[in-house]
Length: 155
Image (cartoon, rainbow, N blue to C red; front, side, top):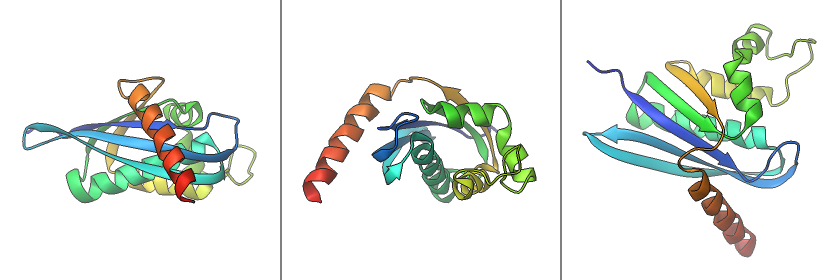
């Protein structure tokens, strides 16, 4: 039996160290009944940073994944958010969890509640993070720009 796998993509309108009003977009690419499918969504934040938006995208994707598509399996996550991708690749998440969501200096971790939620959602999966541009980068940047324009008009 094949182990299920998905590809996940994250883009944000903000890039470190910029803080402000921003949006993040996520896409889950999977197969259902032998057919390729995608699901996408947005997250928003005021006075936020890129890593916070990326973490909110992770939480949303894994929540949806666990409810609708697969309870365990492999997930490849492509993101331009260096802090999230590099922290995950370096095994920081496990260290922070062991340390009660505190950094190496014993101080509370920034966005600890989001890291903790993301950790819990990802637990049943084997996850790998790939930093940089990906097949959906241009599409997602365009969609984020249009979504932010739409939201500004409706406020």
